[in-house]
Image (cartoon, rainbow, N blue to C red; front, side, top):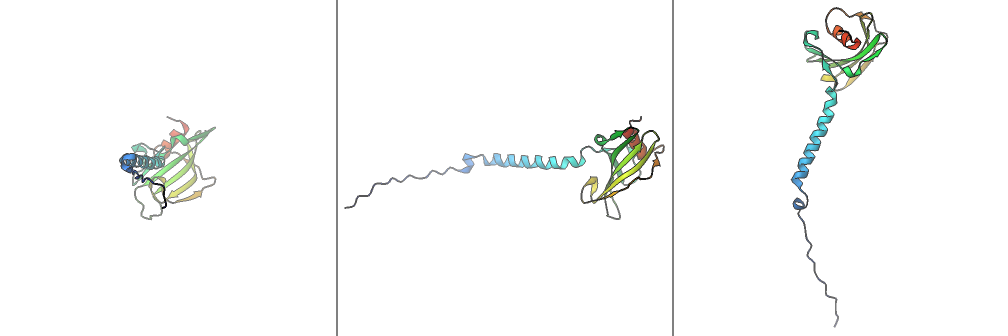
Length: 157
């Protein structure tokens, strides 16, 4: 007679993942994390841009913004970025423009250094850049968006 060792059968214990981990809580945390992540990526597109006062805006279907954090002053000159947001464009080539402008604070003049066209509003979508070297100086004038931007860039009242 052959004797085999007696084996004991141990029934495996399965724990439900729902009990071991709070699955609903994890889903909620994941949803909260993804929402926060999406908001953080969406924010910088609009962050920093400040709209000009309504009376300084041109009449029509556009709004002009500037970024006060990127104003750079060197002697009698200052540069800043302007964002022109078009509400509608019949050519559908672009819906917003970012323009780098240089201001002559002493002589109240402005010239364009760079223009970037965007296919979507608020500087988003595909971009097409163009440089304007030694753009022609233009007088600021007594009203309008260039006057407001000159006052901001040069610290004039």
